[in-house]
Length: 382
Image 1 (tube, helix red, strand yellow):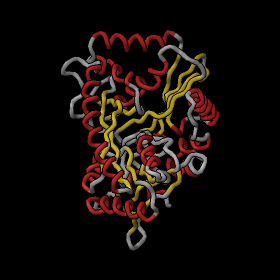
Image 2 (cartoon, rainbow, N blue to C red):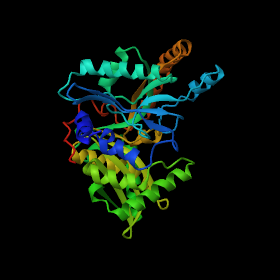
Image 3 (tube, helix red, strand yellow):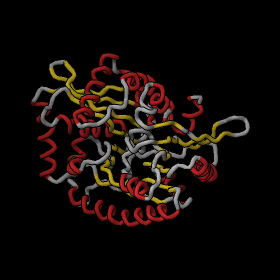
Image 4 (cartoon, rainbow, N blue to C red):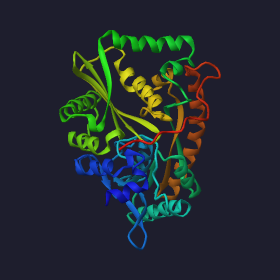
């Protein structure tokens, strides 16, 4: 697939769906039989061969790296004497970030091509007799198209930061209650008191040696948590070089030596927090590198949102509020499909109530939480 043709569908605005990111996963050993991800991307071309639409589609032989947990569904299939795997997902591997899943050329008619992509995906799923087809973390426009095609919608909850036109970090903190504001300032002061220096580097500013150091942090974090470090050193190096300012590293140093780093990706309007690792524990450094530096970066760069990753109610007192996330599901079995649809509908009610309750942990003063508007985003440079 030509990189320019793929990126014309939106990859130039969002690094997580860029050709460099997705092809890098394939090229540098991050997918395949070792991890259960097999690329099956669906493309729609015009008669002259011009690419006008696509879906990042994968066959899966396990549930690793999806972040929409369907273990109960898998168990139900097995109890029915059926195989749950393989299944198909439209997703970014190992990436629980909201974004486009039905990729449309800006000059093409999305009202025609989005339903066509969905229908072609379902036909592919039926023809290959998989257990189901699942769209994970679609953005709002894609979600509406999936809803219109009758897919079962499932609601999740993450914790996202929104830019309410803040002038700087102090302006952001001024919207907090006094106690919560004091807590954040104390956390940040702990980092400086330990003589930790923090700086921001973009992908094309990170040396090969520093990528090697970061990859050591990354693998160590996964091994400590009994996870699988799927992303290779070559992947980080090459995508950092290719994506440039679309990759944002928060580097922490002590006496001039790297001791921790957080890695983010930025689209035209959003910062996505993805990976963290450290040489040893420093008080408050995780919060500084993974949250506060990212917030300052978004304010400085005029980004509208910051998604720091899945899970973690500890993010709420630091300004990341409960935010619904979504997935859409088609099941290749009439009775089990109806059971999944019923479950998703009931779960939505529970999740909506849960999100509302979590808002009670908000650090913002009454009436000071982010509103419905945000500053115009600045385009990411690549």
